[in-house]
Length: 294
Image (cartoon, rainbow, N blue to C red; front, top):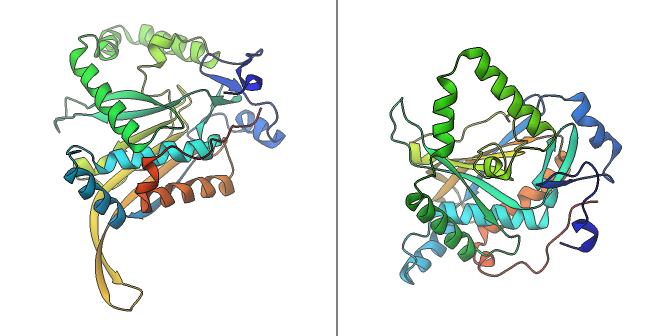
């Protein structure tokens, strides 16, 4: 990070710096759209998987047996953030911030029963990470979670809170929201929270679901939900006019419209689609990394 970004100023947060040079209309938007769910926009798109499947087969022949489609999706998203950093903004306390790190929230597990849920965890990436860095960091994080006996501390805290009287629970959640509003939540909480991060990426297809449209939560300022659906086969006319089968991945993006306009969102996901169509470009670090506004 350049020196001009490293210096902390009044109203900056532990996890991000307040943006002061962006359009006044954007700076005003958190005061007019108070609840992030009211500012949530979403769209569904489709990625062609022909290139990804060929690339994954080549990687598995070379010994990367557990390399998967999800690793490629996350690597493509991290690369997109390196080039379109406004997608890593978030809104908190009525101000818009640029997040200092790339923190992707993922889910693991889930038994399919009504009384259990999957575990959420966060993996921190660098904008220069390759797909192999993404693969290594996710696997290392999962190994740490399996070995860490305190990994379920957040769930135990939730279990304690729900046993308290309702007025105490409402007060406790209100205190958490107030602390988060001012950026005073401890790092030990925000690093384990599924509501704090650059994006939440969920593989709904693993549970036989189509991609899901999600509303953004008031706590945490998470700006993007990327929901992956089932891989499906479609039959379409190819360039020669013949019927051909191909595999595609449907995905839905829900995002906070206060962080960027539609033109910027569109340009960001053009990069995402490009990297999904050319996964070999993710094997090396990007030639450049763009910085967000001051």
